[in-house]
Amino acid sequence: MNTKITILCENRTCITEGITGEHGFCALIEKNGEKLLLDTGQGLSLISNAKTLDIRLDNISKIVLSHGHYDHTRGLEKLPPQENQVLIYAHPDVFANKYSVKKDSNGDIYKFIGIRQTKEDLEAGLNARFVFTTRFTPITDQVFFSGEIPRITDFETSDSRLLVKDKDGYQPDQLLDDASLLIETQSGPVILTGCAHSGIVNVMEHFSQQTGHKTFFAIIGGTHLGFLKSLDQLEKTMDAFDRFQVQKLAVSHCTGNEAAAACYHRFKDRFAFANAGWKIEC
Image (cartoon, rainbow, N blue to C red; front, side):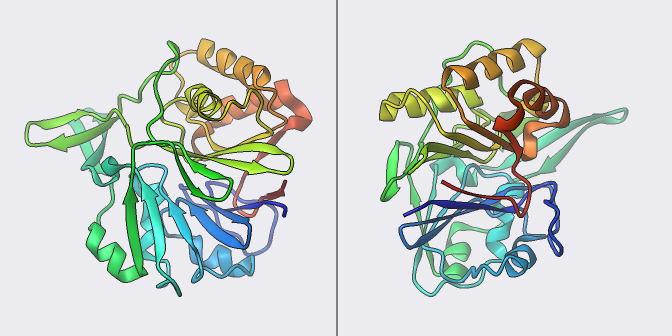
């Protein structure tokens, strides 16, 4: 059976009447008679976009949270209760007390950007059960949760704006909860990411090590290349896309305009914008 991936929430939209953009990400995977969500956006467009695309959201079998930021998780509050209990896969740190910091003339401004509902409230409201794991895990036939992604490259760095708050104050967020999906399809393996805070090259290397894949049919989702520390990182990342022989690079969300333009210039017809309403069958 073909795998169908539809972007339900993203910063921009495809040219489809009735689709709304928001700062966030959500992708629907339809495979083997199941419907899975990677992330849920921030809840502004999930329900209306699904209605426009004639997609039911009360019969999801699995939800995967790529990390615990609001623009990937707050749509959980908008989802209807599920017909059957839905399993929500995530890293144990997904409920960490997450903040961002912005420099201002009056000092640092801290903003809470984490999940505001409790695990128990979300489970009760959705008819759900959280499954926490740090390991590479099959979550259904031919769909794999990355678990923690080792940081092995020397050019993909953490985002200093992102923090966690504990009893000692604000600390750098290592984002160990950053996770992605590997989906086996008829066209080849597909990597679906939320933000790739671990570094998109680290994500590819991790899935290659776990599965033995040396090539990937598609990379879809956020790449966090919009927050580059140097152009050298972008060049090395694009080199890695070629090394893994990526046939379709469909970027979203945190990729950024400059990095997206560079990727389009290099990859041409292998490039796509995975905006809200975009879909692919593979």
